[in-house]
Image 1 (spheres, rainbow, N blue to C red):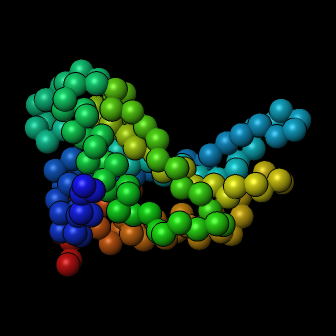
Image 2: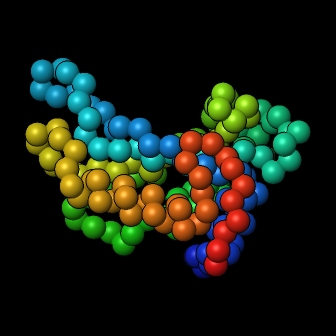
Length: 155
């Protein structure tokens, strides 16, 4: 039996518990001339452990919990399937990244935003629109950009 999607308050609680923030990077590929080109976006959700004193090892049960909760948040952001833009979730519960701006170990779930079959390797308006939609949903949930900051969230 599939789990019911979490409501907005439950998602906000996961954001707070794991001190989630987000970053955007270009999704890159090689063109026909083997030049690196931007073909979409990567929106990374980064979160950490509930107890700031925890320093678990990569792949530990604590990492798996953070990863699972970040995926839940990411899935709640995604719009219904669309033929114009593809969203792909990636990341690993066995990977930890030290983030200098926050001075902490983070787990990351990546949302790739890319238009399938675009032959000119260009980021287009559909991808930009999808990124803006996700950014607005993150803002509505009180998820800060760049590093964790506690914000009062209006319901």
